[in-house]
Length: 439
Image (cartoon, rainbow, N blue to C red):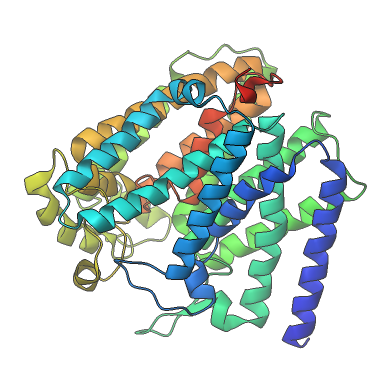
């Protein structure tokens, strides 16, 4: 099939799905398109990459900068018009706000304070988008719609690019020539994270529908979403992202474990989720400092070598730099520059916990851990109030902390998985009309 025909068919398919979804989601306001557009942005390549515009590691792309500033301004205008309860939302998630303040303060000791400040302002976008969702008449419903529309758009276009536009959808190793699938994302691990998030959401949504808790909003929705789930699994296999595959499997095991416990009336310990997450975080922290010796045997079991595909070599370069300033870090956004990327060979730490220590030190990692554990407490409480929403939140937290053992997103609020955790953390305990207006 000629690529242009495939492109037109893909666009038609996506537009048709979105039209059906719009008809069945009339209670969701047009403002929800702003966080959706942002989620599509962080779940795919930057605009500068799509349009081949000039960019640098330190200053980024002018096109991306203008786009993000526009989205932030639109979000602020929406919130002002809706008379959003800023104080109530901030109070609800005080540990996250303290973490953001810590990021800002750390710019004081950054070696590149101006660039660090610009990188910090990008982090605020995630919180503004969470506020826009919270200001919706039904924040949970809006979150579900954003997930669904992201799936309808990014998964088909990833398949399209890999198959018919390989210059965008595939990446070639400059040394070995090995082909990697990247789809709409920047590299194969990003595609793995996208498939992780979408795959779990689709399973959760389909099971809810089977139980009668999530009726289809159009006739063939279930069939289409089963087809999209198959496409997602196909993409995840092609991305060859072991970390995302493991995280998804553990997330699904967690989901069915919670479901069986609920069905059999088993009362779970109140600190069960927090204990599990704390243990995974501890493993993640120790891993780079022990050159992955703590998980070496498991890495071999899943087909990875003792270096975790070169990750230990990256950590061995980074650790001597950050150890002298391990308490407070180097300053938010202060490490990754053109020079450091040339030295390390990549532009991320491939361990989210090490990435946090690198930028805001052990103090920052403590704040991140407290925020995640506070999310665990609230998610487990939600399991009793609204099981469906409690279990998706709990499982995303588990998958998130596992993913960050060998990937790095926990130190970036504006990454896909971190943003999902932030969105859930701001959702109200109950869908109370008028909550968003502060009235």
